[in-house]
Length: 452
Image 1 (tube, helix red, strand yellow):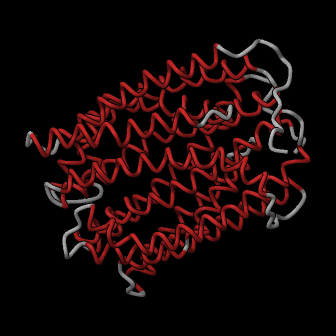
Image 2 (cartoon, helix red, strand yellow):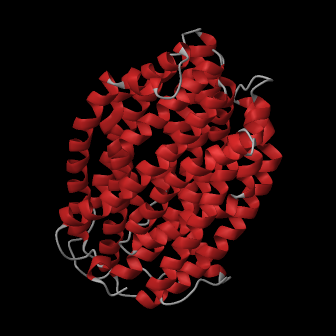
Image 3 (cartoon, one colour):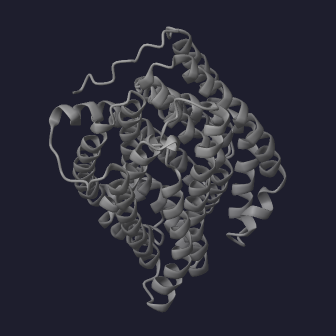
């Protein structure tokens, strides 16, 4: 933990941003390609299987919301401790986050089994599609602990300035998926269940590896701990981040439900288009992880000017990313959709989504970095409130009026998404700069031990 690479409070901010964001982005790219691989193999089974896995993926995002909340919350409490020089506290925080992850895993698995059938039907799955979606979900919910623990360990390592280890497991997982998917799906004839089983096996191995890396860095193996004052401090960071992600997922449910009024082909097209867009956004998400780690450590060290610098330079790098990705979305979307399906209806829907959402690409970057910055300085409530408005309240009300009341076509949903994202990015940027400008220029160390 004394490695210079773990210390993000000195040195070039640009260099730290690039050094951390590249492996983080590469890991996310492989993770999304992993998901697209599942879609590809599902498409080899049948268009119905592709639609089922697409709908199951929307439900499965609930589990990811908990995992991302654990990752964000764990990083938010550990990074300032490192910046403030309180490295002896890190092992204790990892223990508390581990125990909390197990609890969340059990709750998620039980709720998933109780609600999955209802959510699949809510998303508009037809009678011949719903059983396929449920087959995928039954297996993945059994592996809840592997998913959530992987996220938690990745968050702890990210706070320590290590985004490489998570990249490694995601990269290896992608290639393992290419081997296990055909084995379980076709050779052993598990069908859609085989896709889910491969994912659970790979995530379990990933979690074990990441905890091994944590043990090396902290000099100790993780152990259960139940200090509720620490749990409360973690929950103050985890719950807003998870609820923010959950509102994104619920908003996605609503969007899928509105799109589902026009048929499962449109759901599949939107789901595949969304995954392709995520691949293009992954460099920005890698940058997002870097901003959170750098800003968190410098916040703990009281280097407030450096926190501002991290945000500003992150936005500059994000603009360069947008200049590359927007033309790809505008001109190559039909070709990219053709990789996953031969259905004209699915291809047309996905390509339309990508072309329209290209307008909002940089707005997504601004949103990501603003949320990361606010979470890193332990101000997670505004991102949660903005997420509720952006992902749930506004899309539900606007799309209900336009689609249900006025009878507008399906593509209206895409224009609604773009409009809301652009407005939200402007608001997020304004609020983040307002908070940053309120910081004192003092270099005194911020008290980060309020939970001790």
